[in-house]
Amino acid sequence: MPLNKETIEAEIKAKIVEIAAQTGDDASELAVDDIIPATGLIDSTGLLELIAWYEKTYEIPLAQEEINVDNLGSLTRMAEFVLRKKGML
Amino acid sequence: MATPIHVPRINNNDDEVKILAFDVAIGAKVMAEQIIGQVETDKAVLDVTAPVNGYVLGFVGQPEEVVKVGSVMLWLGETAEEAIPEITTDAVGKTGSHASLITAKARIMLAQHGLQVGQIPAIDGRITVEAVERYLSQHGLAGTKIGANVAVAGIPTESLPEISGSPVDLTREEKGMAATVAWHRDFAVPGYIEIDYDLAFWAEYAKRFQEEKGLLMPPLLPLMASRLVEIAREVPRLNATFVGNKRYEYDSVNLGFTIQAGESLYLAVVRNAQELDQLGFVNSLGDVLRRATGHNLRESEASGATIGFSSMERWKVTRHIPILPPHTALMVAHAAGQGGRGVLGASYDHRVLNGGQVVAALKKLAQPKKD
Image (cartoon, rainbow over all chains, first blue to last red):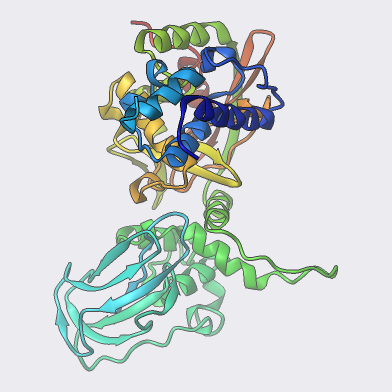
């Protein structure tokens, strides 16, 4: 399936819902522009799992300095970052 | 007297390694520090060096053979004609004049390290765990993680339960945990202390730090761990262990941080943490934790902790008593708070630290350092 912003956002959201469920939280209402760490839906361990999955799924190894709110703070930003890294945006 | 060369430990999670090759032949003269062969795990290859000058008397293991860490892989002699000692359980204390002078645990350790009773200087006329531990330390063998070997050695002596069941091989991580628990059981004299503290100071500090630096990850726990590094630098006995009846204070602070990744529990290590500023530490810890989450920890990041930090806040646990990682004296236990108050506890090795010293450290840790 070709990468596009909406597909990526949906995939990432599905992963977040899965991770949040581990600690009994429901992330199904997460909006594309919500700042993920500010929602409290997933904790730091969950965020680590999300980032590890994100790197592997989209094959974009991240430098530590790239892991910030500007690049990865919301579903939209995470999706756009994938496309930017792949030269598709 | 013949000198054994033991199978080295490559990382904390592997109790067995494969012999890749020997670079020397029987009868060859070797010099101290000369590379005599290589061993490997699926993660790394390590050169094995001779501890002393000598002649190769014989090989115990063979290339491609999987052998236990700490067992003998090669014997060196003072002359090429020297006989290889026979290493059997009997030879290390079950029979003979030494039988009544050696403790059971010391006997197990000798067997695992391929040592003989006669090699170990007695303490007050007895060969004890402490005597063996001192010998291993003096001969550079302490890093072979004695606890792991004791754990392995302990397995055959246990009888199977009467209720039917099936033995299941442990994963590498489970073996690592078993080794850690065995060290805690066999060597540390563990105590546990906790204090409560006001959550607001750290929460506000971490929130401000996160906003200022634009961090994605909440930095609360990394910042607390960074503070622990500072405290350990100020109070060296916190960053120490107990070997040969002495407190052994480490030169560097290697902070071990527990991280659950799926079914695996890792102790991810930031080495030389005392050299990092706050942001540098937060980033370095984030890096190793991310690799642990992806099951890609590097060799140096999976072992060598000198002090530890563990949190079970994620699971809303309000108290947990951590096991001390091998050769550490302090493991901080961070737990979930209630009603604005948090709990900070610590497991500690009473041979190195007393309760008052641990409480003092925890009180310092309860608040960020004032700028």
